[in-house]
Length: 461
Ligand code: SAH
Image (cartoon, rainbow, N blue to C red; front, side, top):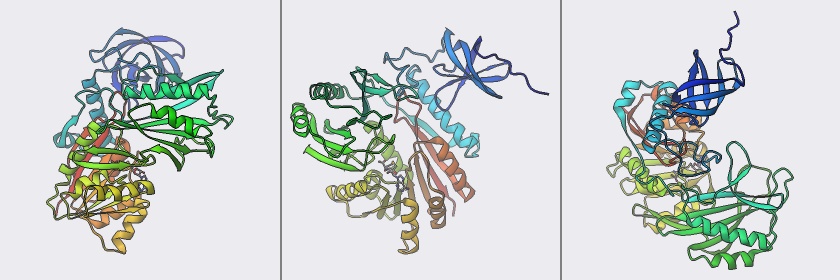
């Protein structure tokens, strides 16, 4: 018999929110039928308008909050609802942390097929921020001109429509000065903005990166062209800003959502940003990955070092190593560290960073981890006692996991920005004898649904 859907599209119902989904959406049930509602959180009693129904679940729009959850707060940012960045700013910070920890637990239990009770025993409390505001060291503003009006801001949720952001509560306030200067400069010089539908126009994005340690800023303009006729003027204008220490162009002429192209043109000041985490100094090229929350990064790397349990005798692989950040942290307490990373500019930085810090027991290779590591193992015989991985969201490559398993390290430290792929990979590792020793979440992205996780796995002799 065909099951009848208990809700009708466009009708309004009242409902309790009893859970939160992976993208921060509230989850509730009407006669056993699941509805997902953006902007609602656990504990809210709401009125919801049903906007889409599928066989087993549907989507609703939050109409009214009849009774707010105890975890609900007024978002500090007035445009939090429209902007795609801080999708859970309406949740108290402690509740955000609890939500993120549960999200990791659920993933490890369901996808990773780990025992929930054991996971709870192995858990260390999620590491939150003391002050979860103005924390990011990187911002990428798209630029558009709509009906003659220049827009510089963030994309609205699930769209490429720009919302202007007078103050962003997770970015450094100094960005506002940089953007104001650039806004005047663009208008005065009548610089065209990129139109992604027509694939025309010059200026695509403004990328600003900050050195937390030095409180310095590096500005890159991403252009759809080989030349920028306003080079000199740009430099003159930005030089007026005391804390801007470097200015570059990036060329991106592709029809793509990727913000940066592969070619950089250095215009003025420092070509690289210089920062320090713990007692290690780093040089960062504009093309290299660099963690966006410097305060939490230091805690994350300290945890990685703790979880690696090094005595000074170990050979360590640091896979997906970026500019060698974790590698250099580990090198101080290891016999030798081998770092592998796909972006060549990042490996150039990593080698220089080893030199800057007088670390001579770290070697870096550019290439795909899944290709370089098997070669290092099979051709050069480099085994490892400890393997650290810190892959992008899609997780570790399957062949890489195979190689790690065949090298048979005593410990694996998995740093992950996606609980789903982390859990998928933990399942594979646990099928090959690895057990979770300890794990914890680290809140690198306060007010968004993203969460970093760090897991220590070990193999019994
Ligand atoms: N551990 C570093 C970087 C982590 S981000 C840090 O904390 O800063 C993930 C890194 O993996 C990025 O630098 C990205 O360029 C790199 N990467 C992506 N795919 C890769 C692959 N197949 N092989 C090696 N590195 C890869």
